Length: 435
Image (cartoon, rainbow, N blue to C red; front, top):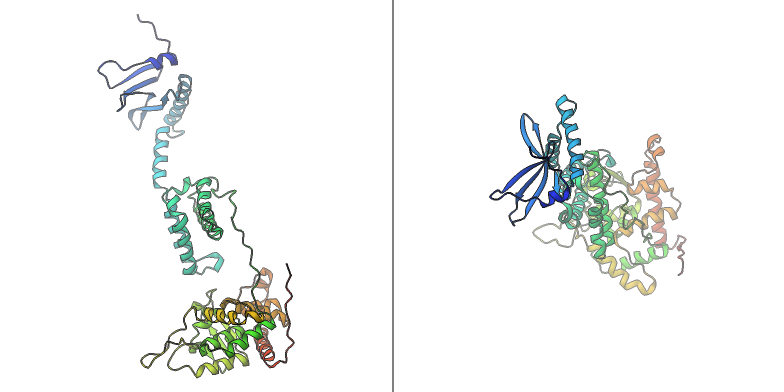
């Protein structure tokens, strides 16, 4: 009777395939086998295996490769698998093979980062809680797509969202920083923050937040407000009047200063939005940033601008048309960069006299700063700009629409500008800190 072999790791290491066999199993301990097979390169691979019944069929199941998994560890793994197998037979748990199979299927079904990104955008188009259920503007969607395509898609787009790691996220954020674009890095950070938050809420990421510990590379710090004081405002108005600019361009600049409206809202203003009898300009929801209708009271000075615009109206639907009219067709909208170029030329001519370089949106900032300067309450000034009330308690409890107070603010702004022109207003200069 042959004596049982006392197996050691040295003996297993010395095991060779019998002659003429490409694969072979050898019983090492009760229920534990070492499986040998030829690899393509001629090497012999060794694996620990045990035999079990899964779904009514006998299967050889692996416990790991030798020598990475030693003899003692293989015996311990065998005991763990047998305990799980016994629990499965009693109906207390699934067989570990089935659990692994389900896990592989679930992993295969997990969406990629790019697929979840598309789902996130579709969700934003249906409505956003931050916008009161209204869809996010397509302009915002385009910015998110640009950020994703440029710095995220190629790096992690095809990865499973559930497997997204902190290191991979950090690499996406660092990419624009390495090319010297911290602003773009901040946009990438915000895009990934929104995407991963959405994935966590939808259950696509159920482990640790992959963005935990990653900081925004460029925290938002508003730049100093670039607004003209009374001296600079008066210089701007006089320079515009004396210039050879297209009449509509001059009127646009003045109208922005009198209403505080955004450049695009003024540039694309149409005649059907104006009610001169009621001194009212109604900006439709589709042209207003917050996606809701906004009403602007027209002061005496603003109505004067509208009257002067009648002279160049022609057949155009735009109050401030471009200079591209001819005998065959009416003028279309003013070119987008017309006012920006005009302000740049004016600043260049007046810089020796202390003229301020302004951009089109700075005219809106100048209007808002002027309201504070002439004593308009901050919350009224913000309402004139169409900004949403930030104070929660006021928004919840105060049902007053402040239309009268807003109309008074626009009238006071118009009167102040008129007084500056006539020399009847006290010119207030803003002190600046000297370096």
